[in-house]
Image (cartoon, rainbow, N blue to C red; front, side, top):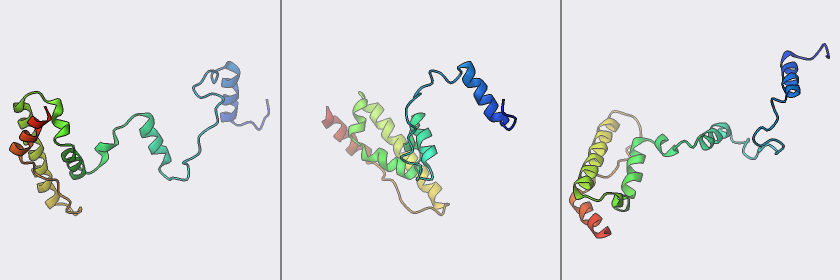
Amino acid sequence: MDRFESLAERRIREAMERGEFDDLPLAGRPLDFSDVEDPQWWIKRWMQREQIDTSTLAPMVIQLRREADGFPASLRRFTREDDVRAYLEDFNHRVRADRVESRFSRESRIVAPIVDVEAMIARWRDLE
């Protein structure tokens, strides 16, 4: 053993000799360095690998606007009018709560729309 070998190098060498690095996923493949110029490359890769839903990272008002953009098509999953009504009323409640909260913050004044529940239920009926 080389007397200048560091502890880390020695442990890596010993692990290799024991075969602890054999049969690892992606063994023998080149490493992907295509995005390392991006300072956030590591977090983006981690989020992709862990399949983290990035839509939840947006501010609430943006999440609400995206949700509203999906109406009425996203309501197709409901089979009962009462369920649609409850969902839309909950949506409006969340919009109002976000508006109150945003009044006390210094963030931009983007607002999510209040949904006309009866009009949206009529559009939901037309989907069937």
